[in-house]
Length: 393
Image (cartoon, rainbow, N blue to C red; front, side, top):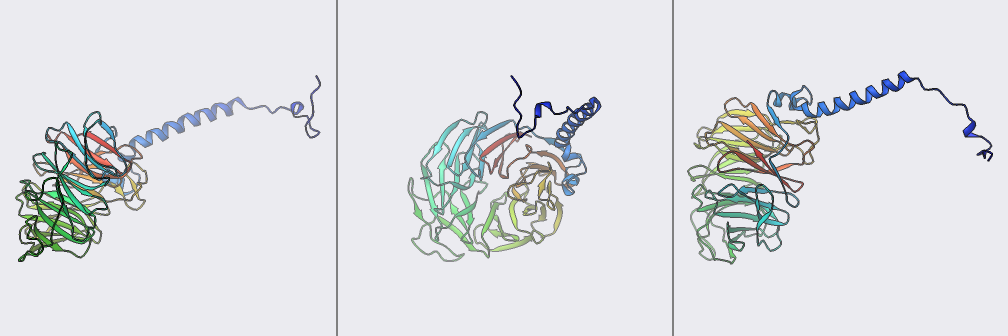
């Protein structure tokens, strides 16, 4: 059959161009080498001179990229906490509150939040109770670890979201704060079982409203509350609002020392186990250490972020910018665990400020919440993409 020309030109009959075999070899070598370089760089970026600040922070820090376990939740995981035996993880996400197996991620228990998501979460020191700040309703609900029904429910007077919650060391009180620019200290031993009780706002000398003892103290602040933390003796509460963190007496609400985040927003607070130092996390990723008595700044721990390029130590741009989302001290006070919005769990020496370990999967989502297991051997981190990762420390 004769060939049919197309557009009066016979493509099949066109002259063939010879390709130099050397060119093919060169291209193949280039592709292989290029792929190797990309893969190699992705693995070693944290320890190479790239990304400006990121490289200087990572230095010789050990980088761990594979979590021990990965659990799947829903949406922003703004609260995580280990159960008393470390075998379970409380997860507060967009769908509500669950207790999950720390290894398999299987849901052990689902707590009744009446369709509300969880904005913040705290587990009592003994691990027997959970306080959850619910989205939209402005409630702080208390649950027994083994009871899916709420034991207590406290509401802010303005019904505005509470975005920070913390248990006192003895588990009898809870501090909460949020968008209504008020810090409240609730008595966890008071209330109506399986019911909701409106808490009145109290000043330091006079109780108003129903006479309920639910609210032990309350103080108005200038900005919305982003974080709260009790001192180890339970007598002081650190409150993060806007560019500062202030210490308040837990009974009288009398203000004490105020610490600033170097013109940045304070995003997290934590006390050392001896109560002599408070860590102030900043929106740029750094953490500042202050003496609680004198107010003197003793150390600035740089975050494992490249704030200029808005990229984390792996060279990837985080979805929500930088910033220290949560802080935890080791029991000896010598190590500080820092969760960064860039997706990194950073472990730094308190004495030197040096980062010794970085935990993160490449191209990770923002890290929002953190807890350390009772045996101090694992960390659990909640992320903005609905994942929960358990890391061996």
